[in-house]
Image (cartoon, rainbow, N blue to C red; front, side, top):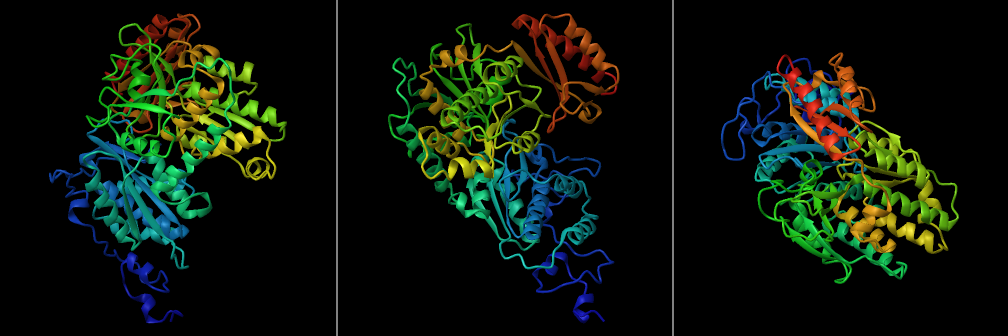
Length: 575
């Protein structure tokens, strides 16, 4: 007999196992009962409007770069299962785990869900596989899948700190999916906190603080206090440039998302004259002809910006406020001059490098991480002027983050405006914990607190950019002119039936499959001066993305069109 007695052989549900003080895995040969609310099952999936939306067993889902993203009608059963998985992850680590309900820059009809690990980082890679397997399991097989998963990762120690915290963006489907997440966490008997409407970075911040109270107060107000306090202190030690062209006026496109409300809240913690924001696109259709993704890809003014002057400094958030793009009107119809993630990264890199030089610090490593989407001229500027050769990784925050943390100061921004700066323990010892900091070290201390190093954060990044523009005395035209000029570029999205049939090299600049297509792309590139182009599958949608650069805007547009036509020709057959 087991040392646990007859009780060890009793057939009980897996959630009940974790409610027991002691347990073993004996007596688990048969399917175990896992109670799933009917509305959150695959076969009886019911959307936020109360409509029945059964999910065919053959429909497959993949946990990608941003978790799961789909039409919101398909997601209740997915979010329920992710609520359960977040609870299991919390039990395994005895930590707080986050669950964010958002589809970021996707249309309002979509939604999504992703799990946030204890330090505010993305879900561990192995658990991404668990997520996909769990969601793709049929209702009948779910108890077996749950049993197998729990046996694989279960620990016998108590987990008194296990907690799931959840937030959502402003989509109509959010509250229903929040209920699904709560029900899923209940399956693991893990406490669940509903934090309501938050930006994605705010949820990441709260997860980090729950697990590391020294990082800050694990509340929304704690987020505002931490960032605004550092901003105000750094503002006090700004240099006088004499001929500053900087003005505090900014026109902000909020993408009709949650960032509008939250940025207004953050502004309440700032000095009135520090930043004067004119808010636009606050409460209409989410991401419709507005937002960072729209401005970056279409390279035109967002809706309700027709009246802006060419000298006006403008910025765009995306739907969940984790991306930031600056721009100004070009004066040519609705065209814009972009200050995208590359320009933000270069501005930050220049500032930090100069501060390190001023402080006389030479023993901290500094790296800048880019993807294939980085403008070619930004790479040249970083290498030739700033003196840092960028490291290239595949598209996706996880790849960028993993590369950045190898440096004492790791800067990563995707061209789409998503990025941040991360700092090592050595940076903490040398800079943050310096007992008698000179002015340069003090600036680095404060700047590292303005930035939300947990994750890319549009609001924190905006405050950082505004401080640096003020430091250099830059207008938006100065920012554009003083660093480098973008090589003209065009991005296109091509819908495909199965994005998995498109495979690239590690850095995503060369297409391996379908065979022979890269050679055709190379031939198209060779016909344009100063050109480059690549094709890569989306990590979240059944689309293929085309990027083209050339010496002229006309050349970039023509090259992108030619490559798109090539891909569409493939689609008409088997892709």
